[in-house]
Amino acid sequence: MADELKKFVLIDSNAIIHRAYHALPKTMATRKGELTNVVYGYTTTLIKVLEDIKPDYIAASFDLAGKTFRHDEYVEYKAHRVKADQELYDQIPRVRELLDVLNIPVYEKEGFEADDCIGTISDMFEERTSKRKFENFQVYIVTGDKDAFQLVDGNIFVYDLKKGLSVAQIINRKVIDLEWGLQPEDFIDLKALAGDPSDNIPGVPGIGNKTATDLLKKYDTLKNIYKLINENVDLDTKPRILGLLKEYKDQAFLSQRLATIRRDVPLDFHLEDCRWGDYDKDRVQSFFEEMQFHSLLRRFGIERRELSLSKMTEETEVEKKDEQLKLL
Image 1 (cartoon, rainbow, N blue to C red):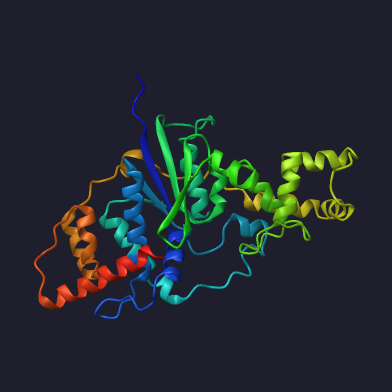
Image 2 (cartoon, rainbow, N blue to C red; image 1 turned 45 degrees about the horizontal axis):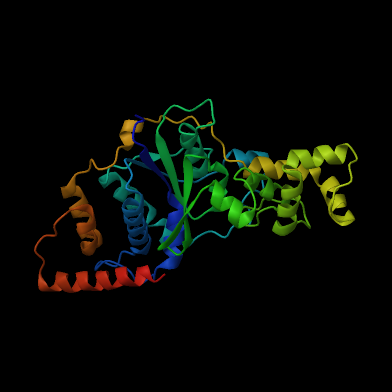
């Protein structure tokens, strides 16, 4: 009899942090005036993931400040991205504190992005790779970023936050085929052709997502498109598009490299460090009470302490915000 499948959750923390900051009101704060919308949104998203997936193991990853190998290859990478508000960055240490009190390990590496760390870890579970170290697992990548779609495999899924923080969809190969008519690996070449303004990946100027998708459906990969061009095969596309492809060939392959999630980040990864549920309830209670997330304690199996009338009023307000969140 085959071993029961275990579930491993990988959280793209930066994606959740940015989503939470923009989804929740910036009036959410403690009595001392500390803004908490990011931490609250991250916490409720984590709770939803725990309830929906019921993981056996869980880990998180963050982008670190500073340049990555992508900047070394293309100095303009993410150059046009508008810097987030300082109020967002000020809450990241609190998110890290949340993960610490819940005993959820964080994997990150200078010179790489969170996606690369997640890609490297997920590769250890992927059925079709020689790097596979762990069997009988399903891996769920929690994010709101479609970049992670390229990692989807038979046992690797994306828990995609489609709307705010409350609506999610499990993405697998079948969903990608039905909704986009593509395979997971096609999302790399989609960016190689159409680019990505948010990351300032140039792609081929004049080619958008629709044209790029049509080309990939017809000719499978970027490599095959240029193989046919080099062989002087007439592509079923407009002469203008063919001209753009020829003119910006080097830029297309540069964009492909920038869009590819690395799976070889040198991480000190230990699966047992990620086992979910081994946390100190007293530490969790203290942190949640400091953040005034009283209504969320019961979601971690922790009974709340007796509250004064003033604190009961505060808790009622937080519970109202929790109900508002469900509507976002």
